Image (tube, rainbow, N blue to C red):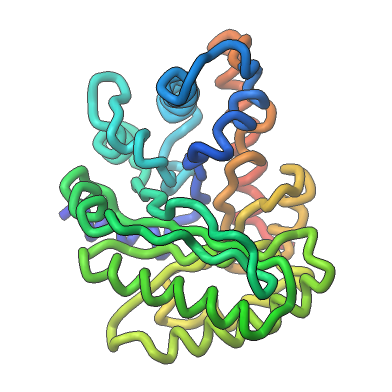
Length: 298
C-alpha cells in the first residue's frame, strides 16, 4: 500500500524535504529570485501560472527524485495542477518517488503577544478530503514566533496541536511549523519556551498518534534532540528561515537526526533564463549540498 511505503520513507529514509509551497504573499519574491520581474505578469492568475511552471520544472528535473528528496510540500494550487499530464501528487510519487505534502494554512494574523497565530481555516475539512483523494500523505502549517513570550508561544503550540488533531482525523500526517524568526532578539530564549510547550503538546496526544515538526535551526546544536528521540514524533525537519543555503547547511550539519525542509535555500540559484542543462546542474548541486547536511553530520 502506497501509504505504508510513504510512512516508512518519511520516518527513516535518508534525504530531505523540498518546500515548494510559496503562497500569494511570498510568490512575487520567489518569482523575482527566479528572474521574473513583477512587470512580466498581470494579476494573480498569471502570477500563479508562472510559479507553477517553475515548480514543474523543478520536480520534473532528473535531479529531483526520491533518492535524495524524500518529500515535497505543495501549495494548494500546485496540488490541483498537472505535471507532465498527471496530477502533481501522482507525478511526484509514481514518477519521482517523492512523498507529497500540502501547505494548508491561510497565512498569519497580525502579531500579538510576540507571535503571529495562523488565520482561521474555515474550509480546512473539504481541503483535507480533496488532498486525501489526490494521494497526499500529510500537511504543513506555519505560525511565527518573534519574541520569547511564554503566553504567546503557548498559544502558538496549542493552535498547532489542535489543528494537527483535525488533520490527523483525516488520516494525514501533520507537520507542525512554529517558526522562530531568526531576527528574534532572544532566539535561544524562545527556543527553550517552545521546546517545553511542544513537549506538553506531545504529552496530550492520543495514544498511537504521531506528528512531525518543522523548526527553525536552533542556536545550540542538537537542542531539539529530545523531540527527535520521541516516539510520538515521526521526524523533525528544519526550515532555512532566511539563512543562505551555505549558512543553513552549516547549522543543519551540526544537528543530528534533523533533516532539511528548505524553500528559498533550495531554489536560490535557479533562473528562468537557464538552459535545461544549466538548470538541472544548478538544482543537482543544491540538492547534493542540502542532502549532505541532512545526512552527514559533524
